[in-house]
Length: 491
Image (cartoon, rainbow, N blue to C red):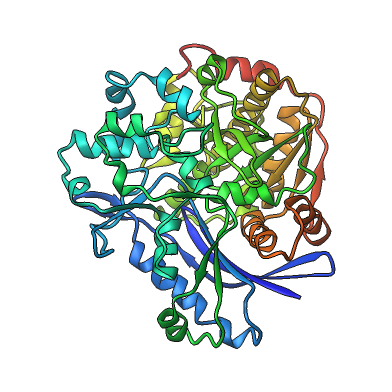
């Protein structure tokens, strides 16, 4: 029996999950869960990074009561693009900014005036989004933030935790690839882009592959958490989507994945990036994957729509659980109101239901009148966004996509899964929910020799985690709805 700890921190919550691998199965046990709540300060929207580190150590301190034998590995994954700056002594130069902070507003257009988007895409293959690290760094220069001049190190969020756990300064490949600063072919930092932005290359650490051994947990940290045995730390696939895709059972050349969480990541696994003009025009991204793969995908504004609606309704004194929201959506009329989940209206809306109603009013559609109509609008809009991306993937790759393999939190919502099958006209196989943590463990298991390959790990996940299949239902004209939603001038 091999045991691995996955530290999985998403944009809204974090968890520590203990995995046990044996007899061709991987069983997972959640041992600690915590909220990840950003903080608004006069300097902008920030992550509460010290609180997150406190929760990680609190979770580690629970291990001695659960485990007598040494761990075979510890790995961490988080969301992408955000970073911390450190001085020569390794001290934080402020709390990291949140990618939804308004400091990047207008930056893609501003950067394009001196750094053509075609040049950036040809080097990095990354979808142009204002949240990307490239635009965050450009905004620092544009706003006269001198912190970059005083920084000795720039660490993406999981690599910051690596540093605090082991003392090692690295940039793990899958997360580094999301920054829009990494050469997609050479898999190293694009020095010319850094120079154009005025970012000193010296502050970026060496890029390491997923599965790289970083050494043991620092002795003083292990002692503070009551750990009796040394624990090796691996740079797993530290981008949470890369970890989730690593655990997708049955992923092959004729299936696409949807990693459904705060964001929905819709894509396929390839051997090499696609850096064509068509890929750039369609705004696809080429991110690093495990075992030398590339994840050709597009970010879609996922469960964020529903999460923000939930938060707003809770502020108004109405609390809805996920099952209740699904039932309300099922009872609402189909395809009455639709939105583009990626419209700027929804990036930081404040009142999401109001933003959805305003979008519908502006585009000449009925305003969703109640919670059920709003939820139905969100779910159908997401399903249509998935359909559109999958059709674009087929055009870019020449592949026929027959099956959609959905993992992550969205798989708990049967209504969303069924609407996805209906809209896309393809079978949806949903599960596992905790794909990110399982993929985190699989990379550790391969690196430690406990598994021979990622494929063997995916087979273990298929044997271990429940999955549910949704067949598309006929009778609704999703094609006409898609054409109406995405016609020029709708948003």
